[in-house]
Each structure stands twice: as C-alpha cells, then as structure tokens.
Length: 152
Image (cartoon, rainbow, N blue to C red; front, side):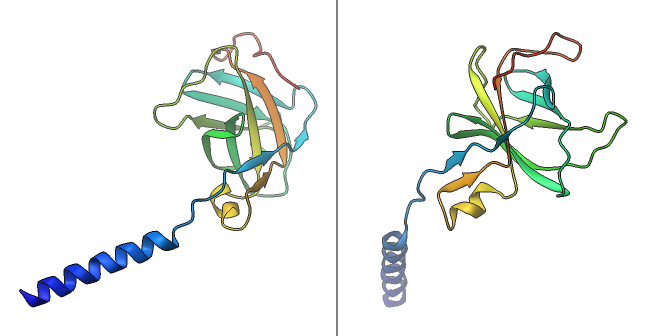
C-alpha cells in the first residue's frame, strides 16, 4: 500500500510542476507579404471546405508553407511543392479547411505563402511574415466558372 501512495504522490507533484511551467503561446500575427500583380494567383476551384489556387509566381525554394487566413486565424495550411509543372509555368495548391470550418460567401480571405511552419516560428516569435500575400473574396467556383472576385 505504501508504494501506491508514493507513486500517487509523485504523480501529483509531477503534474503540478508541469502545469506551473506551461506558458500559453501568444497569438500569431501574420504580416502581409508582397502583393503579386493581378492574374499571378487565381482561384480555379472553391467550395466552402476547399480552395484550389493556380500560382504563376516562381520561387527559389522547392516547398513553401501555404495558409488560408481569415483576419489573423489560419483556416487551412500545409507544405506544398512550388515547382512550375506545365507549359503555363504555374503550380496548383489545394487547401482543405480544418475540420468544422467553412468559408462564407462574400467574405474576404487571404492566401499567405511563407517559408516556415508558423508553429516553428511561434517557438521564438509571435510574428509571421508572408513572402507573398493574396486576398480573395469567397464565391463558390468550379473549373470553367467566371473568375472569383479578387481583392488587392
């Protein structure tokens, strides 16, 4: 019975110590990057759960981190290869929204393309600089539909 009490007491002490060292991360601030000329980033398909972009920007990196942001909140994100793959010198990225999230018609969102995962940046800073920034107003779109209205 005594070993049980010792291990239970030790567990309580360890949990209390772990809680005392926990620091919540400050909210990440996503700073606007360079705006590209009209037509260099296009929404080719958009549903309330997923957006496909065609990107005609040439990067030196082989992979970059792509995020869809609403204000300062990431709705979808991930690493994607940025190699230009076809005759039009573009690459495509399809971002699926995090579970339980949906885009709303008429709202403005941002595509932020950056060089690092925001979680890695957050270990040292609460500022994330987008290399390229693209604003778009969400409207459902299937390939071949008229162009989604662009922001800047």
